[in-house]
Image (cartoon, rainbow, N blue to C red; front, side, top):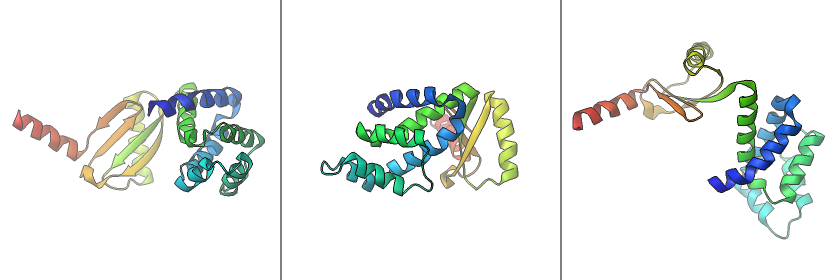
Length: 176
């Protein structure tokens, strides 16, 4: 959704510029409010023209596990005042990309047919960091349809060593 990305970009860039020294702390509270902003009921409540910005702010902060910092509260007020609550998840994603680019890191989504324990994940992370040439922040998702192996997505790069991918390659080769 290009429009949402376009809306979110100025917010993410402005927040990144003001929080350069504490990108990790900012990412933490930003992810929290972005998760809250994904709730359909909250978005519906915020879209109601009879509801004021102060009420929306109060509701959002009431569902958060901990109080926001002054910077976080001001940012949330700005987003709500401008009617951009739905863009918060995209703001958080773009902020993470900016922070990762500055630190030389990347997010890696690892899809596995089976759960990966801590030791296996550490080994896999080491191999992937060599393969992609940068430090990775990993997030593991279980996808039984892979049958076996893993599928790794780092930005726009994909490394698919799953059994499902190999079977699809064999099928394509046999039918060609």
